[in-house]
Length: 305
Image (cartoon, rainbow, N blue to C red):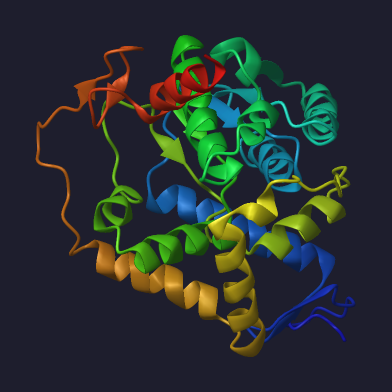
């Protein structure tokens, strides 16, 4: 099939079922970058003089995002980008993606800072998984990764943190919180707290498969290795469900995202001026006396004793 864009005679490389468009390579790249730019403009995400930390795992999403940001903001000499990578300690998985992270940051001339669970907390994710906790390893991983990225971004002077959450990630999170009836977390998805470095998600309007194709077209190395713990999570179950809906009813994921955005206007927000507590262990902002990351550290210590 030829590209659907007017006067374009190039062959299409993708068919977007949700839009009904066939897009050639050039128009596909344009479409993905347009969605990212729209999200950045909508949220007024990037400002003059920002020092931006990119959370880089070395996977397809974060690698494509870093490439895209450098491409879009190349003329802006007032902006500074650097990357933060986290080694959770997952044997046979993270070492592969971290190698990709090293390669792409070298190619794009972006400074890379790598930190590890073992050094920051005293244990790896593999060690957490071996303890046999009721929760899936992904639950612990998410909390600890956010902790590392937040604290290190602050230490390195970042004014913004960019993450590579795509459309699929966003609607999975929204759906998980719908299913659990967690109104507080639903309201937090769109809110910003002054205690934390502001987070930017330029790819939240781009489907996961399109991010992967963008990386492929851009010549970014894509690792096919999968995290061994992903299939143990509730998110994986929700992901399969949403993919089935999207296959049978194209546009479902965009509908969920738009529906949530309309609903979020009516969700309760944090009271103006209300400050979070400070964790009694690490001193960082927390909703309770002890933050979730420090709770995990204490649970691991109790299992060792």
